[in-house]
Length: 114
Length: 115
Image (cartoon, rainbow over all chains, first blue to last red; front, side, top):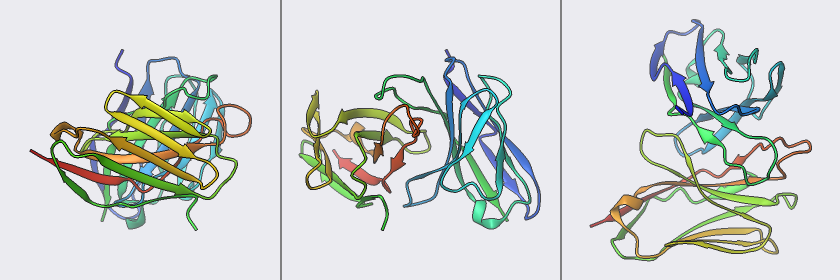
């Protein structure tokens, strides 16, 4: 199993541009999450999904959109990129059920908006 | 006030030292407490989790939760250079219900273990 994969690994955007961060998991997990990590700030939840067709906002959703058309894929869309969206973005997935089920994280996408 | 507070360090110790990493939290509804380890330029990986108060040991690592004082600790015995990483505490209300496994993270503590 590849686990959670993310593309691209790095990206530089100009202010106002748009892009989609891709996330795919091959563990048949129902739950998927998008986080952003800023230096010294821990991880903040952007959006999450509990299954195909079901998404909801996390703590910091403004400026982002998501969709979940399949169990495997959970893309994150940035519209009108702003410098405040410069961050490292992590996608994670988790099996539903037991409370201790681990969230498995992808390797991250480093995004710079200039 | 942040829901989970963690001293970002950085913390630098010699090999073989006992390391203590700590977090405090404010939400009494948190029931599950995790420690994630994140190596440089990698995604976090679950190290340990505990439910409610008490201790849990796994090799050189011990996780401790005191719900009365809302304090979470991770102890690393006989620390090794390979333990050098960022350690993130995280909390969870419950796995199902309305929380859907959403984690609340501390800021992370950067640990360096020198040979």
